[in-house]
Amino acid sequence: MILASGSPRRRELLQQIGVYFSVQPADIDESPLADENAVAYVERMALEKARVVAQQNPDELVLGSDTSVILNGGILGKPVSKGEARETLGRLSGQTHEVLSAVALVRGATERVISIATKVRFRVLSDDEIRRYVDTGEPEDKAGSYGIQGKGAILVAGIEGSYSNVVGLPLTETAALLNEFDVPVWQTEEA
Image (cartoon, rainbow, N blue to C red; front, side):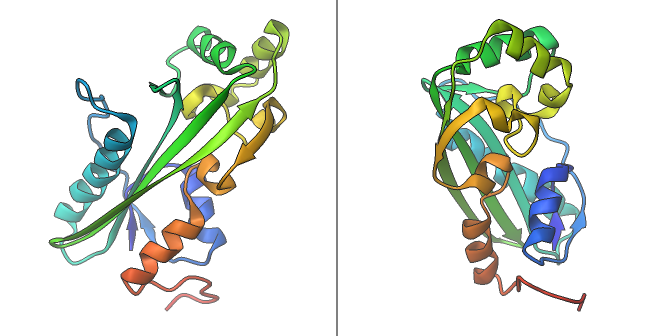
């Protein structure tokens, strides 16, 4: 199997459940379409990533995934600056948002895509806390400007749903999808 993502978190999560794979990140335009809702966006992104890599590897199974943070219906992407990260975290402070992920598997003409949402509640953050967290550098490559698996864990007051989804790949749902394509999990030695 090929993972069509350069995300170190997705690699770690797949390794955690014993899936063997190679990595070939997909280079696609990740701009939302006009009037595209969040579910349609993440599903389209996951499928496009998988399709691009599958075209280059027609006999391989390819997994594409996309994760977005949704606040009041709007998609909060990865910040392009420290200022944008501070602004995003300020908006999330004291609020509940959704982390929405899609996972797509493509092999030849066979395609499957699923999406899952997890609710995340932030505690109220002071401007100083936001500044100090942004200064750690952790928000730089993360949707919503935080990483629940790292220093950002202390920003979160609670979650409802899949923790691994918030990290970047919903493992229960991904394992079920892989099972549909006869990809084993919990492997202990490479086949």
